[in-house]
Image 1 (cartoon, helix red, strand yellow):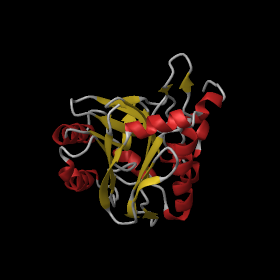
Image 2 (cartoon, helix red, strand yellow; image 1 turned 30 degrees about the horizontal axis):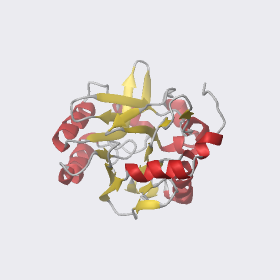
Image 3 (cartoon, rainbow, N blue to C red; image 1 turned 90 degrees about the vertical axis):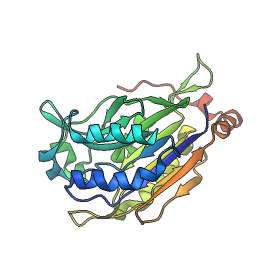
Image 4 (cartoon, rainbow, N blue to C red; image 1 turned 90 degrees about the horizontal axis):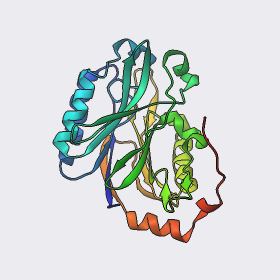
Length: 265
């Protein structure tokens, strides 16, 4: 593992304006070329969190997938964020992971936010995604997933000492202002309990439903200590994660050796 540069892009996403959002986010991330390894965009960054946006859901051959690939190649970094993607009869809240060499993989949001009727209109994903970058094992997830620690639990392979499911948790979100305390608390908790770094990017501003967002995007270390915490402004910030510090903590405090074994179905 090498040290990893992670950039959080906390934007004020335009409502139902995919082309405008691609232009907006392209401007925000342009200065990151050659200066980062991973660029993290918010949940549903082309439309805002809207059930009505389903009508405009793209396919995997649509303009946003192409845009993500172009941005990753231009920046020389992974670019990730979620959008509405239509596949077959369903629409998924799909996190896309685009690499500089043209590669693409995805994770479909498993836990759908019923309080906004997301579970009635979107199809749920099932399988977690594991990706690697500069020797780091990374688990990207979407917003409401943050509340479900069993699905997120970092397991340890006793037959390959030192091998965890992941070293870094990522969350892309549209997490509204009234639940900001939960966002901050849960990001820290997921880092502590999983002996891993945890990064979350949230949007800011007010959406077309009149819902306010306070940002609060953050990167926490394995102790739950914030390495980076943003306020409510639209902004881009980068932090470097230390591979040596993570390894040393896991050696000093091997709580994973006492964890319960389980299989997720």
